[in-house]
Structure formats: structure tokens, C-alpha cells
Image (cartoon, rainbow, N blue to C red; front, side, top):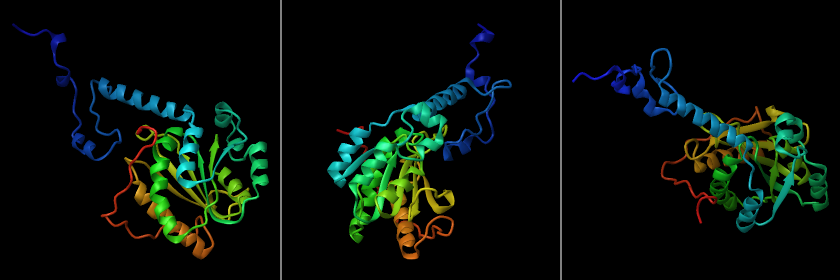
Length: 272
């Protein structure tokens, strides 16, 4: 009995791309093939799911109190702060508000009158709270062991809701820190809604621009490993302190991380 046209298996109407075997090496959407003049339905639906995940990452609210409680148990003092953007719509529509602290948070830091320190660590939700919830704790665990060996004097960790990169400069200045490292959720991509960015600034103060900062990007389990990121950041911090500068004049000339170093991978939001 002859099969009907509608019974034709889907695989037979999809024209495969000759580069399809390269997809095993990258999450990028390459060599998807086609059905007529369109991409196959399965790939189209996968794209829509990825787009939805990226949108959700932008609007997800950071559980700042849970993160605060965890960090207090491992790092000691921890501050909960707020940018001048009082809610998510304002944060997305007014980037300048996310670069400065709210009046209340600024006054709280002034009253704290913190003693001078070597380093201020600042955590901000940025454009992906999911990146913070998934990556900050294991990354800080990798960094902590390096800092403890050299006895860095660390200011209380700050968690900023609705924060952008530049708000770290204001916090570092108010905490009298020699340098500040901002850990922030990066703009979600269609294959990486959970990417963590690290921004280092020597002698932070309000008004600095991007040329004064060093950036380490794509810190996540599927990207730059926590231990490798901590290794690179520690190198840049050490060089910034030695040369008393950061930004475009400071290059990452660190040698490759030894392969026998294991990176911590614990996720405090999914493990009991």
C-alpha cells in the first residue's frame, strides 16, 4: 500500500546543512538546515524558548535577602543597598539611575564610616538576576581562598538591587576601598541568560568611565570557569595594586591556569 503524501516522515523534508557536524563545538545557532525557505520547526521553537529565557532573566527579581544571609555566614558583614532606580521598569528605562545609590543607601554608607580597605566586593543584579543566583556563591568561594592566602583587607560585601556597573565606584569610594570589584548579571544572550561579569576599578570614585575598568566576562558553568575567572581576577587585582592603575593601561598577561585545579561548582539556590 502506497503511503500518502502527508505520511512522509519529517526528516525527509528537512534539507540538512553540510556544516551540521560543527554544531557539536558551539552553542551558536549554525547549520540549522531548512524546510523549504524556512528553518525547521524544532529549531524555530528552540529559538523562541531561548528568547523567552533571556526576557525572563531581565525581569527576574533577585532574592537579595537569601543571598545576604548566605554571605553573612561565609564572609561576615554584608550590606543590602538600593540604587536610585526604585523598581525594575525605572531601572530599564533610566540607566543613569542604576549607576547611583539611592539617597537612603548613600546615607547608610556615610554613617557606617568604614575604615580603609584593600578591596570592596559589590554584587548587583544588573540585567540578569539569574546570573547572580547561579554563579556568585561558587565564584566567591574560588576567589576567597586566593584572598585569604595574601590577607587582603576586605570591606563588607555590598548587594545592590537595580544596580549597574558604575554604582560600584560610588560604593567603593564611600567604603574607602583601594579598589572595587563589581559582580553583575550581564545582558542575557540567546545561549547564555546566566552570564556573570566582573569589573575591576582601582581608586573608585563617582564619574569614572569604562576606560578605567577591567572586565572579565562570561563567568558561568558553561563559559569561563569559576576558578579560572578567580585566577584572572586575582592577577589583575595584584597588578592593579602594584602598578596603581586599572583599565586600558592594565592588560591580562596572566599565564594559563594549571589544569589540575578543580573549580567549585556548588549552587546554593538549588542545593539543600
